[in-house]
Image (cartoon, rainbow, N blue to C red; front, side, top):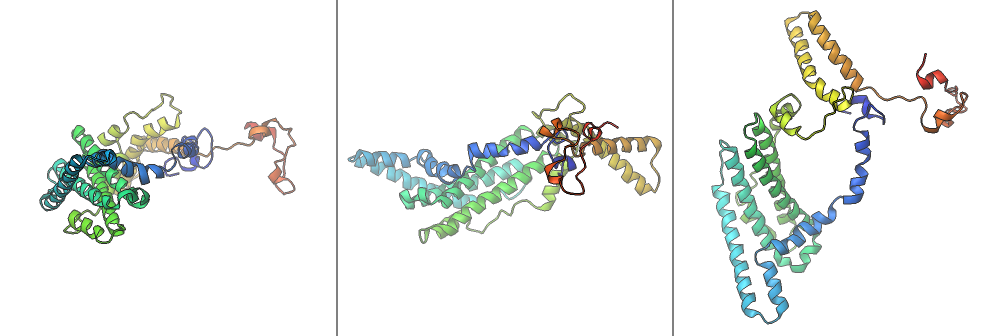
Length: 339
């Protein structure tokens, strides 16, 4: 409704997003809400394979008599744990504070949070096999891991497109939200860890000076919104790969074409009001054109006859209208749109 106005109320040629909206249950049916992936697989199973020592410890236990190998891997595990503790604490102290270089600043924050994630994951292993059954705990670890992945992906994308004017605003907005989400996930686990004493240790190591990430503010959101809702390099960058039909009557094409004209018309009207004057004939023509196109885009589809009704006789009355004052037969002229 925010984009297509009344055209989004019912299905029809004017509703360019209706069919896509109706297909969403298909994606939900096929993929589900990814509860299983988030709560068990991403962290619960991924930890076994991604940890540099855990799977090897399991393998030595399965052998039954590999004491030397077991001792070696456990020693490696403890070394890994204390290394992560050191990294987490030192990066909490020496992380970048200045945003003069956005890439360096956010890379430093991600490095710090990656160390926090690693040490928290190591400490969580005190649960043993029970970890897989702590689905909310595992889910928050998956959230933390996901935000790290998205953070590094955003950093790469920013570095590849630094030449695009305004990309700093979108990058900062994205990163501030990702840092906050990562922090919330790790803090949530520390507050809800089922083994007494481990949660406070997680929090003390990961965030010894409190919670520094507050997320984006309204000013960041408004700045990013202006960039993507007006003709700009950012909008062109984000629109790459979006199909725009060559048909001038296509709704997506109409929306795309009228945007710059609409913004220009708004500026004309604002300037005229500020100067306390009427629009010139040329300006009025431009404003009228934009108004007409916008009005066409938001129109609701209307059908006098649908489905099998098209094959009924002229005296056919819809069941819902029978025995009411509206029970007038649907005329041929109304159904066909002829005068």
